[in-house]
Amino acid sequence: MAEDNPITMVYKALQELAMSSVEFAALVSENNVIKYIDGTRDPVKHRASPADFPALCLIPVGGIGMTHMSNSHGQLLKTFQWLIATGDKRADYAMFDVEWELLRAMHDWQESLESLTWSGEHFVKGCTLDKADETQSETLLSRDDSGWSCLWSGTVTMVFPKTLLVPTRSA
Image (cartoon, rainbow, N blue to C red; front, side, top):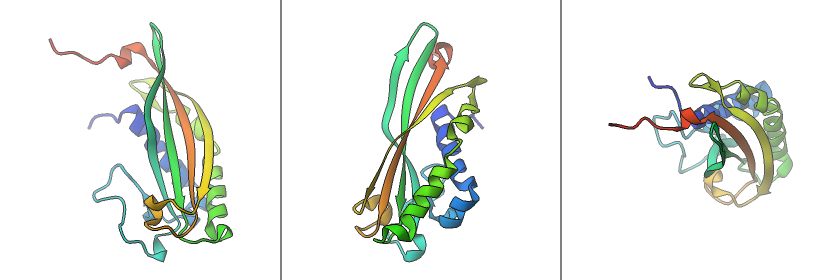
């Protein structure tokens, strides 16, 4: 099987970090983690029940931003967004606990992502938390307008030798 591309590797590593936290996994069941890769079915249930909450989803946002290209390296930014849905309008019911434990689960995300290699190269060079927005109107996970949701963004900086960015061309 072919090696995952670097963006897929980062996506999988972020999901693994969240679910490897015992405290986070105690709040969000593995069954309530919506995965947009490696799935065998539509990842989003269209009818939710109370057992489907709290729910978590990691989505890529904004495409890839190539921020620098030199003779030897290219740098790109990729933003991911955690979506959390509680299914409950009480902020202290699950929202704050889930946010706190996700933050703790991501504590060493930079070190974890910087250890990833693609084609023999360590490519993640930085990670930043951009912002977290809380709302009661996010419907992607809650499937309706009830309950608190959080949209938490983080950006990963990746740097690759230019030789790895050049595709193989047919003759």
